[in-house]
Length: 447
Image (cartoon, rainbow, N blue to C red; front, side):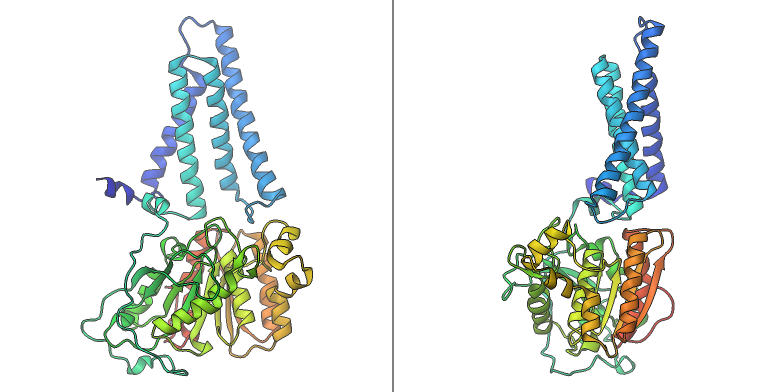
């Protein structure tokens, strides 16, 4: 029964509406009563006025807090949507009113107020979750990496220069699995000594056979905060590629999602830094070597792609522009113009040893201008329609990519912002072009 509860969807109306109704009724009850029968009318009026004032003050505090942390200090790197601001204001209003009622006394009033605050906090959390599109079930919210550790199965040495399998000549064996397999693996930080968490690998059905074909590979990077499982758990990356594989006899790119962060709230900026560790070397040396040593993938850049969201997209732009000899394809979802860890001064200090010149040279636009022209290089950009800051950064990056000779396209997620709704929309609509550029058959429409 407990496991069934964990799998209950928390984004459906039949879950959200009862919670919202309960929160509203309890808040009204906490605001209007209960009062002792012996209370005088004037006393009751003053108590009601104080509670109402507490609601207004709490909502104002919430809005100011979001404005200060999000818009002024930019602590989260994104602009909050009106929906998220509303839910935070509601939550702060309920908490402040609860504190007032606790001071006013009376166990009945206190019980109702605590219940109202708890219900509003739950409703607000669920509302923000829907707005960000982060978790579909309770299990996703509490499990950072649900994928089991496992063996990669039958792997063969792939000679340098071996092309991606010719799909027209590929015949799927009768015992091939029907769907892809997702597992956790440890990618050793042999060269970088970077403290990375377990990576997540997705193997299409064809890669699970006794004699697997040579396939392209896609490196996928989470946002920050985040973990390698995010692109699969929340982004549904494996699900989209399963649909592609089902239509193409089990063929699809192998996906590897390494940990470029080291911890959910760390941001090493995908650079090599004395203070933050050698995140760039971990991805571009340790991870790349591990992939070629353990997976049946082609070694040429036309068979290698990289994707990511937010911080991961910025990393994808860094790596794809700096290493065109490794990556011929990129899918960047809401990328920043350049790396960022707090203020500009802090970014330069912790990431580049205090060198402003090194920081500026590492920006993807600077790299593209320096290393142009790029040959047979595709970059698909994506962002949310309501995400003004990342619309601006994407536009600037695309302009630079076009000037550098890259093939480009832009996918705009309707009605979403800097959230996982955007990620899923861009993946569903951007992966077909990415997969085709990696050497597998093209596919019309979204996945």
